[in-house]
Image: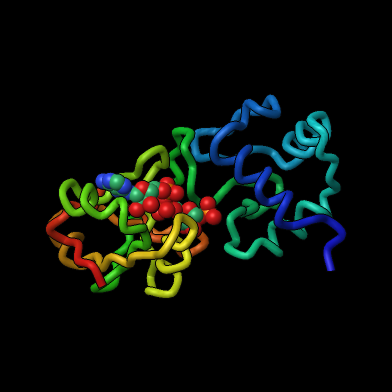
Length: 181
Ligand code: HQG
């Protein structure tokens, strides 16, 4: 059992590693990585002292595996969800026939007219199963799950990739590929 509050630290780490690295005085490299030692020093200087073991417990204990260490364990990044410009470098991947997107009723008119757009994030996030999409949509109210004709969209030239933690990423989904489940 970790001694750190995994949820609380995860939220702070998401903020720093996806959105505001400057809030603790660090910069991410082009692929979103930062040195673990630099990160721990910066967090400590901004009121969140963590040991390396605490950080490892957060990486391992995070419910969606939002953070990844590099092979040598010396650098860390968020696996997806950035609003700062990063090139995560995921290889193109062939999606399954269908993927899913969870949203809420109030966004439907705009989504069905103009498609799914990434908003302030880097990419549109799609889920491999309905249950996950329902959870994503449920953050904002009563979830509405859209079906995405992913294989057809890929065949028509859209590049898909999948993050280290299993989120499907795509630039835009035009409305012709969407239907309400
Ligand atoms: C909606 C969380 C109007 C879209 C989750 C969504 C996910 C449009 C919102 C991950 C639109 C963007 C991502 C359009 C899209 N008009 N609304 N044309 N196109 N939208 O948070 O997918 O916990 O940026 O439906 O679990 O909700 O952070 O994206 O409602 O995996 O790791 O605009 O974030 O993961 O919201 O969530 P978001 P999302 P973490």
